[in-house]
Amino acid sequence: MSWRTAAASAFLVAGAGLELLATLGLCALRDAYDRLHCVALAGLGAPLIAIAIVFRESFSLIGDKALLVGAMLLLSGPVLVHATLRSLLIRERGDWRDVAEDGEGGDAGTGLWMERGER
Amino acid sequence: MNEWEIAAVALTAALPACLAVCLLSPPAHGLVALELGGVLASTILMLLAEGFHRQPFIDLAVVLAPLSLISSLLFARLMERHLD
Image (cartoon, each protein chain N blue to C red):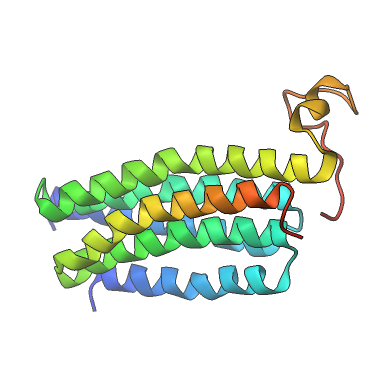
C-alpha cells in the first residue's frame, strides 16, 4: 500500500465518520439550535472526502471537481447555520437582534442567552 | 465493492434519518435535516464518482451543492414569517 492510498483511506474514513457522526447527532439531539451544529459538522466532512479523492486521483477532472464541491460545502456550512439561526430567532421573537440587545439571560457571545426547551 | 462504494452506502443509509426528521418533526427541525441531507447527497455523489470512475456523478455533485445551498437559504427566508 503506497502512502497515497493510505492517506486517501485515512481522509475517507475521517470524512465519512464526521458525516455519520453529524447524522447521529441529528437523531440524538432534541433542540433545533443543537441540531444546527450537525450541519456545520457535516460541512467539515465533505472537504476531507474531497481531499481523499485528490490523493487517489491527483489533480484529474474528478479530483478538481471534488475539490470544488468540497470547498463549496465547507463554505456553505457556516452560511447555512447563520441564516437558519437568524430565521429561527425571527420566527420566535420577531427580530433576531432583540436577543443580543435586550440582555435576556446573559452572555450573547457564548450562546447561553438562548432559552432552552422544546422548539 | 471498493472502499468508496462502501462509504457511499454508509452515507446513503444516513439519508432516511434526515427524511424521518423532515417528516416527523416541526418545520424548524425539518429545515435543519434538509440542510444536512443536501450535504450528505453531494458527498454521496462525490463518492460514487470516485467509486465507479464515472464523471457524470461528480457533475451532479457540482450542481447539487450550490442548489442545495440556495434552496436551504430560500426555505430559511420563507420560514421567518410565512411557513408554519
